[in-house]
Image (cartoon, rainbow, N blue to C red; front, side, top):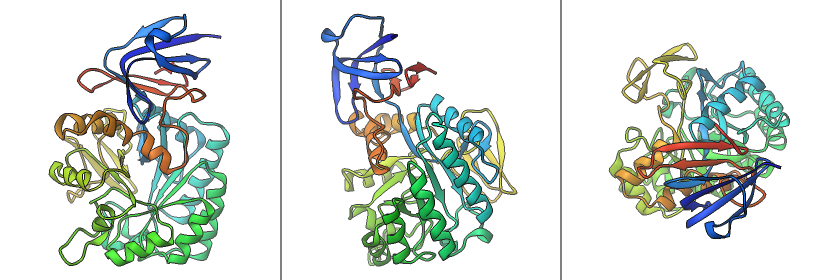
Length: 375
């Protein structure tokens, strides 16, 4: 049995930073986390900086030149997962943006097959639409946005039973409270997004079972003095919320305000597109051309279409520009999103796959391991 011991000045186990600790890896699995002075014999690699769990990204639309769409296969899902693992996210939810019923069915089928094949990095699916509010379409095709039918509900409940995790971005304008409750009972994680929902509507959806909000501040009703909107429901409540921390989707001052208002429940997402892990300057979303310019992904009319971001870059922004503690920033990309989808990933503990990321002293990604193998 091959043993590898990684040591670092600080190791984040998912909850706390441990000084001068060692992670022992055997056969691709973590077998021990203990002070360096107590580490067993074996090959050692002394790292500088911080060792942390592999990152968890719950909103990944594509990567390696591919988008998750109706042509999805186990191989295309594996390719997207592998691209993001190299970028630090060793566990992801490949995400389908609003599409046709046929495409949704095809993606669910491919996702179930990817789970059965134990595809590295595949934690389940995120279906962002089509049951959204056309008043907050964002980069989604408004012609494909539609209310949820009984057939849709039955298909999604069945999918939740066969996937390790299923996250659904929905708008109260296109679903009923009863449908949200049924989806939640089936095991799906319901996330509110692309919606003009009032505070009262958001509260009702939460009571029905909604647990999360998709890309906080973007494509949703904003905080107002007399109408708190969906943003107000998050900042004053218990809903989890993903945030695109690239400094473009959310102004740093706004992000700082959200982090001050909520001490838990917020997590990082990349909202990455096909260009992730590539040097591509453009790609196609549906029949629309998306340009990659100066860290932005843009439709022809200037609408942001996803993000040109990795989770390590988001962590770096939080720590170096906003003064967020490393403990909180790392948790927002590991333990918190993993717990939301009821996954045991996002932590360094014995018995877990050896999925790890290493940041240097300047909080730049230096190394990634997946199942004990350095990528």
